[in-house]
Length: 592
Image 1 (cartoon, rainbow, N blue to C red):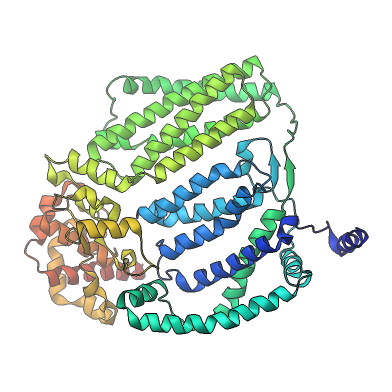
Image 2 (cartoon, rainbow, N blue to C red):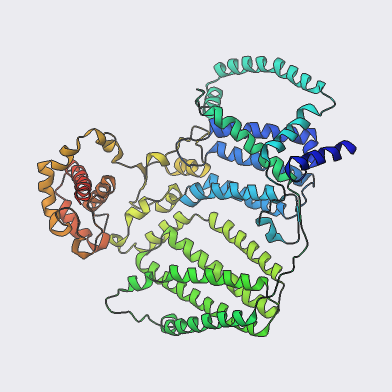
């Protein structure tokens, strides 16, 4: 005990608080688990993961499982001080499954970031004593950040302070004896069976060449993973007591809420005819334009009101005037949310569904539910902490539901059904840009899912294997899942001299009949409707022109007009014209 106190005094003299690691880190079994997992994560992160895309593959899932193993182990041993951590395990597993099953952008590009962020928060709060569920989502850092000192202390306990040092010699001897036999058996079995050979090759097919960057990344990744475990499990904090807060000035709050209520009341009075009847369209405004304007802005209003409500509730002491004004504000905001939803439904009935429109609609529902709960909590005078718990739980459940829905399959199914009697109105390009998730929904139609190189997976390799993608590919084949047809042509486009692309006489002759609507340099919106084409990416231009030629595109209602314009052009003409338009726009910009 005396030695420990001297060490603490020395630590204080070196600057700051005594560094005390969690005693569980001194247990050899658990310490070696953390050490081994850190090494495994470092190896996978540097050698096994896909390095050419953000796609989630087999080794990504293995990494995620390894990363959460220490938390699960301590929960099983009942060593976690935060009892709410275990309720996040189903969500963590669901996130991993969705990343391994769906291919949409949210799940493949955004969800991995959220997963790692959530895991870090769970580690940081795992040893906190909390009074409410929502506190688990709010990280607090009790320990001063002295990364290398924590790792040094951990490694000293692991390698130096162990009384039974002979165990390391025995482990080393076991490895020395085992590894040669393993290598011999692997070599023999590798040659004995082709299936076993392919299994090993596909699982561990990575570049063994040692690059210079590994001198930095290997130790850095190892230390970061190890530090996450050490710091997270040593970050003790007492958060079970409720901190008293100062009450707000009710005069200020009354004026603030009163003025906002009056503004909202005026807006709702204008919206009532639309909410309970037909819209009163302003001059020169189409129904689609009217429906499109407003639902994003109204959703933002709902979000801001929710933040204001939670801020006031944090210091609310049940004042009657404030209760009435808050209830009025929430009820009016709910009405605005209903207006937003009606506009969204109206716009979808005209233009069809998109992934973003579905996400906005679902977020609208979430905000409406929270605002309605806020009114009930105000009337019932429920404790603020219970309200925050309810919001946190509802948010997590909503998030879990959204990431578990095949949103792109829903978009494809909705639009195909909606426009089955008017196929020319269907935006086929939008559906073709969806991911593999939409493949089951387009069966029986003439539509295809078009993928680029970065979206392609090799299902025979574990590193890029994805259950949802590969099972759909196996079930439905590649008949309606094809590679972007213009990539092969454009692979060598940079070898073509720019003057040849731009000043090709035959191409400029072709463009003359485009100039009447788009301008000599592509600087005009055609018929006052289209986007400017000068300088647009040639890949995009070519894709649109081929779609117009096939009668599969009807942007701005000019599908038939454009089909007549490009129907006589050959594939080479279209590709050369696409280059010409892109470079012509760039030359025009440079001359300004």
